[in-house]
Length: 361
Image: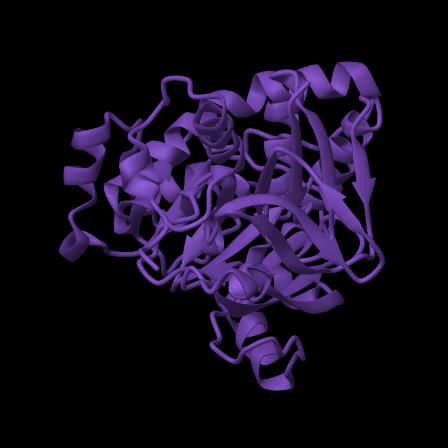
């Protein structure tokens, strides 16, 4: 049986493990802390890139593939474990004038179900939205998933297999022999496998540095709020002014998020808290009376070219990278995992892998 070690057990690592296990691999996941507690936990859970027409075509193709993979994967894991990840068809309402960005060209290129909306349309779709918004776009088939519950579901599914999840054990170095990766060294032990996959999120470059390569991945902080409301206060995933509101099944509303280039600092700030609150109150006035339950920050894995790295290490055999998904890790996870498994298994890839090659050393 082929053995694989995955370094990093967030949604990218967990979905990659699922693909490899289904392909017959014996998988060990290793995480520096509790699995799924970084960007996988901190993000919003929208199964779409934000303002999706702004992204390179390679991101759109990967997102569209993921959107087809999510429902069957979640259905299978939910039936097996009994856990509900709250996969909801909220739709996505994008408020504002984006004519200079030409969304219709993107819509036509990828055959996206998306329609322009007027003020009357907005009032019908989401009467809670402030009356000052009189144009935008409506994407009816966008789903969301409650990301902490998705992580719980993936871990529970993993527990039904013979895989091994090692938590709170940081990888210090990659063990190589004659130009080939054969294992990893951690703070506690050494582990060997036929394949090593680095899915370490914002820590990917630090994990890879002992191989003489960093992949151009760095942390980008995002701060978010959780507001306590009643179900129906916000009905749609709502985007405006580069921020978003996500209504959960229990009525809570997620407000996000910032993009801050400040290294591994995860401190929150009162000024950002106020900015996010003002955005929420301006967009949906009913939120003015809703208390803040939580305010937190997470670290996204930004890449040097705004594309994820999904491919072989440029200098070491049997060492692979699946990281650098920035703000889109959750939406891109199933497709990225499928591509990684196809590469390792030497199967035909669902999408051109050349689009996601890690940068040269």
